[in-house]
Length: 275
Image (cartoon, rainbow, N blue to C red):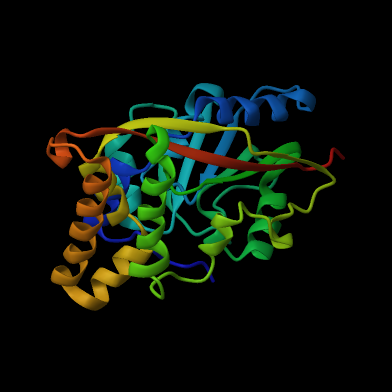
């Protein structure tokens, strides 16, 4: 059974605001891999576990029709609200039963999501809906690395402490697979034509307040909040922000203090064999 996180309306809005946009280089690599051998027109794609739709929007220029799927009604509502393209639509759906006919999609993607899926069932469904020569692309990203000269490592450790210490025990099984870049054998897509690419990243200029907001989008933080209440959750955020600002040693307010955050991505792709 797929895990169900990010379902509250407020959480969906936070997710939409603070999660990074999929880098164009990664999307281009996926399309390049698909079209290296698949030479027909690109009619349809699906983005499974789409959340608030950032990972779906990037597919819009490449396909006649793109569908974003998520098990959360709140996320789909947020994605629909944010949608700017007429060829993209969103539906509530789990990953283990995809609402498409057999052999109807050229591409299925899952961005920062498949660690929550029942992977054997998901792979089976993907194989059903992909055309011969179609591609499954799984990708994710690590916690952001603040890029700030000789303070880069220290600032990164402060973010890691929120994960390893403050919210330890509040993360569901599966999140650790993101930290290993889907290195476990279960993420090996069951097709012979495979590729892995860990070269992509996106830099995002954000305020320290934005970075604090990003932490509130973590499922581990949301679980902590639900079990311990607003006061305890706010203490985590205040301690994080105070440590971060103290390490930067600046006099500006957190909302006025800009920093470069680098999100490093990992990408796994497999092509369904041609008949």
